[in-house]
Length: 138
Image (tube, rainbow, N blue to C red; front, side, top):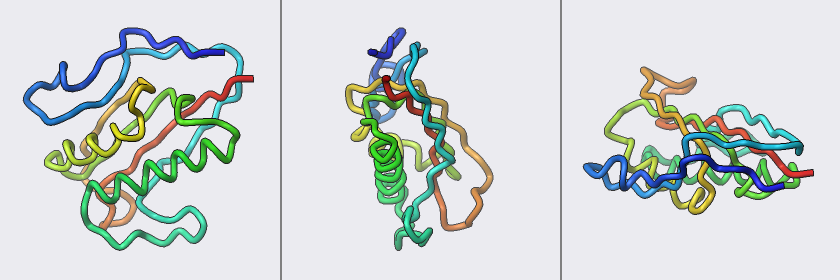
């Protein structure tokens, strides 16, 4: 099974005023497979729930995306099975840093994406949280 990506685009074309380079799309169609629903991933270790020692939005995003990749792999999938992300950031000024790092992990994948700027996350030191969904083929 291959996911059908509808209206793929790159954010460098849709947001030329920002230094972004993310492969996304407007919709993803899946058939069959197993859906992996992940809780919002934060900049902490999956094994012990300890926060990483960084207040840099890019570094926090690396940890978040590593967690997402690890969970998809533990479910038997690969990053190419990622179909949707919802990105929560606490400051709009972190958007470029967060999306540039996220783009490294989704190059060529083209998930759908929604981004929100929120007042706060569950812990005050968290700058980014990403909710993700993957569909692993049968």
